[in-house]
Amino acid sequence: MTTPLLELTDLTRTYSGGNRRRTILKSVSYAFEPGRMYAIVGPSGSGKTTLLSLASGLDSPTTGSVRFHGRDIAELGLGTYRNRHAATVFQSLNLLTYMNAVQNVTSAMEITGVRGAHRRERAHELLDLLGIEPADRTRRTLQLSGGQQQRVAIARALACEVDILFADEPTGSLDHETAAGIIEVFWKLAHDDGKCVIVVTHSKEVANACDEVLHLKRGKLVPQD
Ligand SMILES: Nc1ncnc2c1ncn2[C@@H]1O[C@H](COP(=O)(O)OP(=O)(O)OP(=O)(O)O)[C@@H](O)[C@H]1O
Image (cartoon, rainbow, N blue to C red; front, side):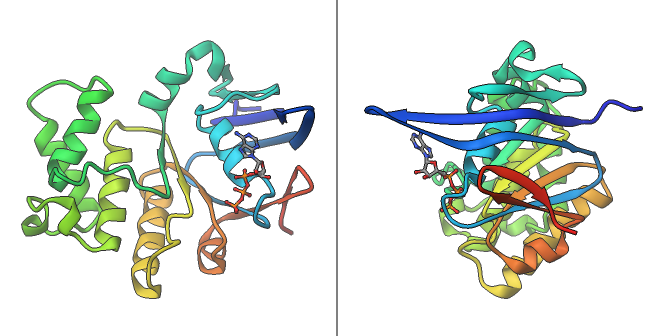
């Protein structure tokens, strides 16, 4: 049997506040493969963002493990995992709005230690892949549309050749047509480039485009039939 790209084993996350403890995730196990697109769905407050935070190395589980190519990410180092292997597109996008699109992508490479003169070239390649026209690449990202900003945020997340791309509600604030374009980008990243794409979403359109839909219900992750 081959080792999964990303494996969640018996993940539990309990939050404590005052004298109250709430277990949001209860023994969640799942194996994610490359070249596939996954949706994590469930009602508000069911723990989708909590699960994404654990799987992307932004938070640590109360018990259980997250393994990348068989290695516990805690042992690999959460920073190393996030910088080299798994990137996240947040709802708030985290773009540097005073910079243009190319600078946003190259600065992500700088932060994560990608060196060399090829950085600008690679940034243009990624922006090209995401359909940002050359003329739009040198305007401050604040002056780009919501859909274009979302694409730049994805290019920024991909800047370091990651294997896994996480996205939290990537089409939340976009109109139908722009959202469809973003879904297509994710679909191609999974099916043409072999990335593992994991999307938290409330959108039926996004879920319908995914290879697997996983429901978070009462702290458990249940694949849709
Ligand atoms: N750091 C924290 N400390 C305490 N409770 C938290 C913390 N983070 C999340 N929670 C609680 O855990 C529960 C799950 O939150 P989470 O954000 O994971 O849900 P969600 O499914 O992503 O919701 P939504 O669809 O509304 O974004 C919520 O009740 C939330 O208040």
